[in-house]
Image (cartoon, rainbow, N blue to C red; front, side):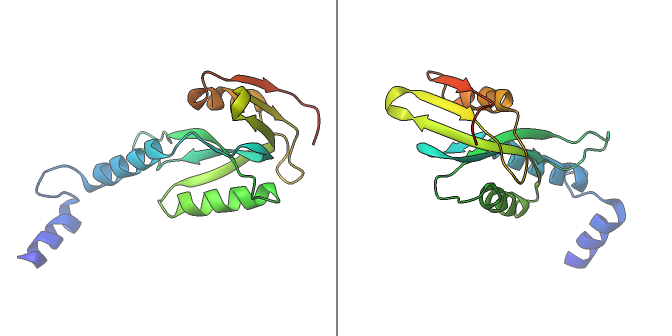
Length: 150
């Protein structure tokens, strides 16, 4: 029975639910992409990276993606952040690309964030895009951007 079931899957690419396996796997990856939080940052002053996360290419050739912001006070280098995040996401079957970096100053007590600077290794992130993403989680904050500073 199991042998005939597996032969059916490999021969026809379908399960008994009559849905293509590829579509089912694609839906799972899309769900994983959707489940990735847009923002994970600490409080204080720290480096951050803007990362594009890619899902699997769809049958129509499109490739779902979204940009996320990650910033951790524990990171000495922008690459420390990117390596940690990309490794975690690749373990879920998601590809990543670092779009640049900078610094964030996050003052929760004042509901204020400043996005500025650049990464020597990855270049300057699009701080306006980072601001847009940060506003999804910190809508009640004042969020400033600047190209000044390192």
